[in-house]
Length: 203
Image 1: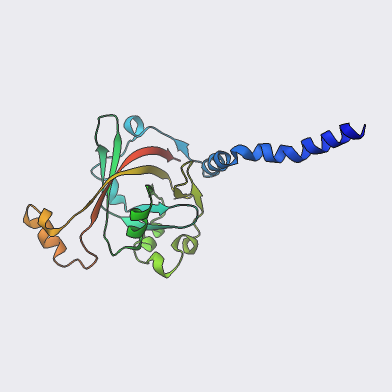
Image 2: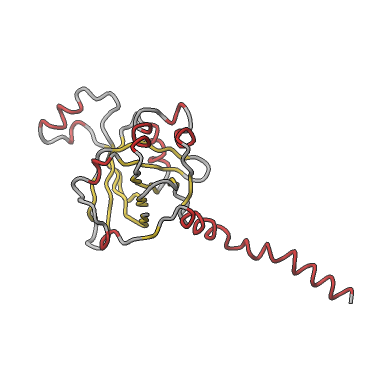
């Protein structure tokens, strides 16, 4: 009888541990469910005009569960890279931006669209060096199964894994447009990041 009781107690104590073996993925799944985001195929179901998508003042976020930062981006591109079946997103980050440090340290990033223009206005005005911008806006950070941060309040989330980065220099400019544009830009010449789309969700 004592042996049976001991076995039952051990089983009860072990159940939470067994349940936690896959708890990392479970947390990510719950985050996505809580955010009311559903996955979609960007190559089949992306309905926006690629030439105007980045004029919506999107948010770029990079980091992991220990640290992250986000910024407003108004430039970018959507298409494919190194293969017709490899959807890619191109983003540009100037070296003076706090997010640049994260893009250089981490492998993945998210691009997000919001209904509320307060988000991109605030993210584009204040620096993460001076405080937690997400907390100031009341945004709730969540993570994909790869650990990439995003905000639950976003209406669209596209997760990318960086394939290549190009640190532009003035010698790369081929016509007068970039030469003139950067002549008065104090944040430095943007680095170009091309990321393979590894996940996409929308409300």
